[in-house]
Amino acid sequence: MSEKKPRELFKERYERVMTAISIKEPDRVPIAPGTMFYPTEQVGMSKKEAMYNLEKTTKAFIDVCAPLNWDLMPRIEGIFPGRLFDLVGVKFFKWPGAADENQRLPDHFPFQYVECEYMKGDEYNEFFNDPTGFILRKLIPRMFTNLQGFSRFPPYSDLIGGFGLMFSLPIFYAMPNTRELNESLHKAGEALFNYANIGNDYISAVKKLGFPVGLTGAALAPFDIISDLMRGMRGSMLDMYRKPEELKKLSNMLIDSQIRIVVQRVQMAPKNKIIFIPLHRGADGFMSPAQFEEFYWPGLIKVMEGLIKNGLIPGPFFEGGYNQRLEYLAEFAKRHKGKILFWFDKTDLRKAKEIFGDYACIRGNVPGSLLVTGSPHQVEEYVKKCIEDCAEGGGYIVDGGVAGIPDNAKAENVKAMTDAVFKYGVYRK
Image (cartoon, rainbow, N blue to C red):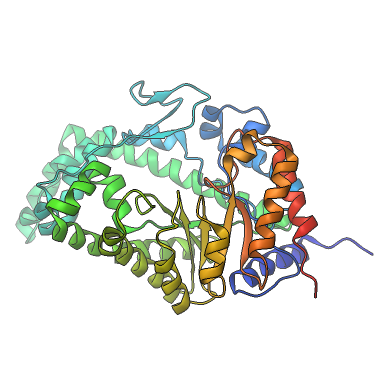
């Protein structure tokens, strides 16, 4: 029998994943691991090299992952472009090889997020009164070293009418720091287009090998935008008690923009319906069930429903444990059967399958600790148990927890996870 052509393999793999998402049984349980630096670690690249030599990074992804015959190749967007970060002067990350020594980490360290209150607790009304102006004059200069020039951008009151535009904008663009700002943005734009082109070339290259790519678009829960990028975790948690109405108002203001940005990006990039939504502050232990219901869940629901209305598949990644939230997920899943992909980290998969397995596809959750420190036999047994608990009736995709395959996972354990799916995941019809 002749070997299948890449076009046939692409169609077969994509349909296998889509069948599972639609809560039907494909020929086999799909396997679609996410990962970040695992492929580059396997070929001996430092994390600095991975972030600054993206062409070599994509080659590592192909060389390491393609031979494993997964149903979706991992996205490369999880490895951020170091040069772009340098050009705009990112302050909310530290990363290996950063040009700014204050942001620099050793070459083999992964990038790290810098928690900070980029918006102060008494600035809600200022944001509400002029969101664009606040973002330009306050948020951007606080978050980017090389974009300080935006702090002098004229307020909207100075731009109303012909005379305001005639004087205010030329003055702004004539300032020395504005010239530096323009130069930084011009170079950053070139770096961003280069990054996008490398990503699109990667998608085209793996398609020629017969692989779709998973999760090429991304969105955030509104509360996480506030907590991650504006108020910080401490600030956002205090605001649930001190400024609850302002917090909810801001969350509602961010919903439409998340949907619009994702839809625009998907239209520009090669088509992929699954949208990655990493969830940070909604896990068990971060807030009470009542707070989750009041502050976190409503905004996330609206973002996911907006994506569904646009023909996309929300793929929220529930970092940590969500065992106290399963009833909320079940209620949403029942209203959107076969249109969502719930990716779990430390949540009880068997319980999740029992509660809403007839409505939502479940993805996960081979522990990162097992892939790093366990034996191939232990990994095989864990995957076998997951398949036994979750595969019946369709609606299950194998992946790691903690965002997929850890950077320092053992290659033999990754192979054991993969082989177990092919061994135990075939549906008998």
